[in-house]
Image (tube, rainbow, N blue to C red):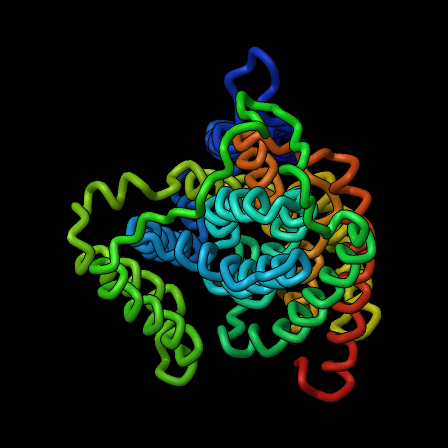
Length: 428
């Protein structure tokens, strides 16, 4: 057991303190090294390590990644972003458009990709309207996390929870769509209260954006131009629609959501004209390797009895108290350990608890908790990095000032909604 504990601690420290100066180490190699050490130390045999990997989750993410690669080539994300901000005639409508479109897109497509492609367009729109882009970027990051709460395919931790728990896509959506909707409204209200004095047009000149990352606020105002391959878009859009429909109907037609995602990804590649090898190379393989390694590390810890410490001390019932405690636990711990590792190590603790309440609470708490700080979720970091390259600085303190309030209110709302669903017999 001592070896398993040391390897588990080593792996999680590697994930938390990733990219240290002068050390060629990141979360992917930390998880992979941890998995190898579990085998070398004799905690798991190679066959047991392979058996610990949740290939259904990896396959689901692979299918979504292939579909997203084709949609990105077609220009769908840029088109959605540009068309959404184009209808905004004033700063407040622009904020509503950014939040609403980001949340909806993040529910059905991996939220990290959504913010990666939306952020440059939002910054361009803000500069054309002569408004400060920071409030819109803060809102975009938080909306992506909130929107992704609603479905199994919204983010990686939900994918792991959905596949492991066996909760159908439709049931998962019905549980958490109200949470996402109410949380989106809360986000809009909080951002408006914090930035109501800054949501106004500067008539005299463009806003003073800090010139960082080599960009200059004095550059000529950009025009929102998005490259769209309409032929590819027309061929791919039906595949996307059928894939989403397949997710909702998966429990009715008795087809696993993983199969639906793989079929959608493969069909999109086949009709796209993109060389399959190019599409496969565009997949985020380091992320999949990270998940695979993490599954092995947690599997080893479980086999060695390390997780019994938690099982013996954590009393979670699928009732109101369990909903509250799982929300608080996942929200707080996700500030130290990112939400995916938190989810993987928590699943063995709750997998034998009957009902869906704790699974859904874990999904909500781990995702909504990511809004508290700039490093709380990968989507937040992507927005900050993309903004920096465009000459806009999203400061840690400013993000946290809004994020802590948004997180506290949305997590409280989530607990209330799920407890109500439980009392009404809607949440099993």
